[in-house]
Image 1 (cartoon, rainbow, N blue to C red):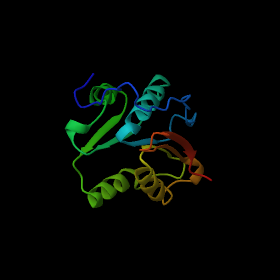
Image 2: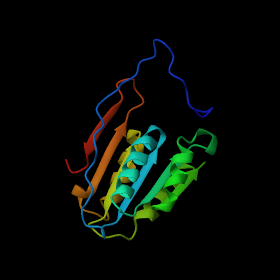
Image 3: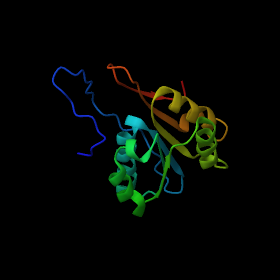
Image 4: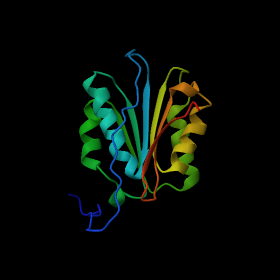
Length: 157
């Protein structure tokens, strides 16, 4: 266990739910871009592993307050042989928005966008993605800060 992860202490509230695997396109030429922040890192590591085991290349952008607060750094490093992995630390909000937007622009309407993290993060990525891809190709896993936890949502509501 890394030092910066908080241990679960007796009487802590935790939500455990059945993981949901977002779909990914069967066409290996379709581009997949993954975004994560905070607790959303775990779901994107799992998805990146799934893409890698299917022989699919991907681009993954991991955002964290700082390198000290980044989760699963070793797991992200292990994925570098299967896809492009970028870790962005200590970015002010305007630079964060610029980095996330430039990662998907320009792209094709068939590109699959996956994002996981706090609601403000996934909402920003969704707004940016709607400029480039079909709404049905945007997949969100929203991680709430409340004890109630995780909500999986498709952006094409």
